[in-house]
Picture 1 (tube, rainbow, N blue to C red):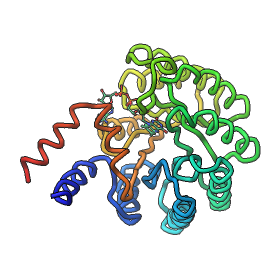
Picture 2 (picture 1 turned 90 degrees about the vertical axis):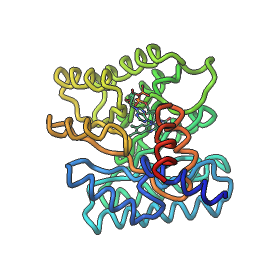
Picture 3 (picture 1 turned 135 degrees about the horizontal axis):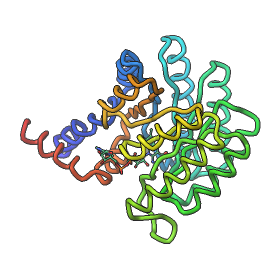
Length: 284
Ligand SMILES: Cc1cc2nc3c(=O)[nH]c(=O)nc-3n(C[C@H](O)[C@H](O)[C@H](O)COP(=O)(O)OP(=O)(O)OC[C@H]3O[C@@H](n4cnc5c(N)ncnc54)[C@H](O)[C@@H]3O)c2cc1C
């Protein structure tokens, strides 16, 4: 019974994830590349409490970077700090991240650092800023729902860092985050303006029509070096439309066996995804 249920959930999760193996992920990025959309590969996994698992995840990322290069795939990677050891020991996280960043640098590619729940924000921003002072092939996600983010954006822009601006996907307390969509969008607009005014390479990571078109308007005034980023399986037509309009677009492509936590966030932020579950049950 459990495996039947897992199989059904995986079928739904495949709407947002490439599959469970690296080959599934490469095939999906290659498919995106044929539409001139770049891929951002993410090996699913978070909240890791085993040192051995963090080392295995790091090794997997090194292998992925080699394969992207050898197969001439247009893409980069995005890593989760708690998968690299942030919950165990901050220095384990920075050691693992350093290894990945150095390899990416040697291969001429880029590493994004995902932003996780608020207990980790300070560590992630501080570690990012230290690394960015020495290396330019690394960027970090910032969440517009966090009230602190304007300070973080300014600190990161001060060191010339690359920000991926997203709304934020975790269930946080109203004391530290904006909860209403209009408040989150207002902060997103404010941070986006700061990035267009002061940023060099950055990413606008949203599927929200209003925010995307606002970025388009800002880009006509500021001529900044930026790209749109969206998640696999969400607003695929919009990705192609933006490419046709001349914008750079990347698609975040998660893969791996630990797909449940990620899938839960996608369902929570868009309740109609529950219908995917129903449809999948009916179609057998
Ligand atoms: C490239 C990328 C990287 C990200 N990295 C991080 C990160 O590091 N940390 C983090 O906390 N969050 C991250 N996120 C997730 C982000 O914070 C939001 O939770 C998510 O993108 C939904 O917000 P939205 O901007 O699309 O706006 P929303 O207001 O949530 O949605 C706007 C519209 O987009 C569509 N849409 C949005 N979500 C879905 C969905 N799940 N299914 C179907 N349609 C949908 C709908 O049409 C909706 O009306 C990332 C998002 C992207 C695109």
